Image (cartoon, rainbow, N blue to C red; front, side):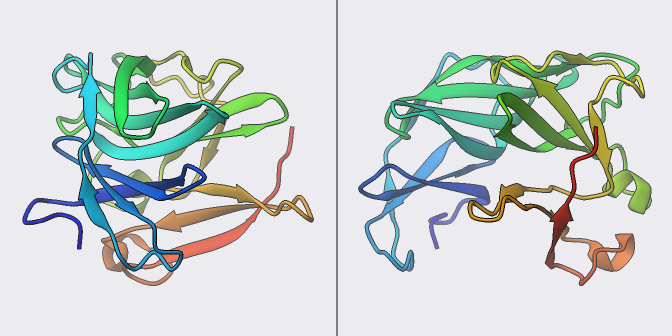
Amino acid sequence: MCDFGTRAWAPSVAFDGQRWVMLYGPDRLRAAISDDPRLESWHEAPCSLVGAPLGAVLRDGMILKLDDDTWLLYATGKRGSDGAVSVCVSENLLDWRFVRFALRTTAPAPQPPWAATESPFVFEKDGEFWLSVTCTTSMYGPAEYHDTLLFRSRNPFDFGTYSGGASEPAARLAAHAPEYLVDPDGGQWYVTSAGWIGDRFGTVIPGSVAIRELDWVR
């Protein structure tokens, strides 16, 4: 347990070469560190986030290593009344600075009060960065719950603006909160899908995480 009586939501974990660092939200940035190779023992660590507008962060955080000295943190946020994805930068995984909104949304894109740009995940492929967000517009059925949009950019700090147009995302998947990984030996890509209300909306096994091969088609 790392929440110490508060909510511990959507943890993201990274290894800095000496220890593991876990960041989690959702109401404010919290951190825990572990020197245990089995990752069974964690202790809370002080962390900071500066420069973020009120509401810009922090829900569904995801850590990306940009280079040897730079880490990025993407998170679901709000830009005024519009949903957005924030990006922050750090050199030590504990002290963060808000940079900008990596993805903005405008009407008529879905704008529920909790922000539709859920579960951001960013990865690099062939010199381009891909931002994946699950655009949960309602809780009424599987089509809304499993609607993931992918945006492509050569700049990991800017994936443009989404206004609800069908041609604006680079790709679309029927998945909830997916993550993406590649086999370093064989080069095969995989995508996951998860969900906490799968008994209603068709997750493979309620409360489970599923994985399958991902094929790239241009």
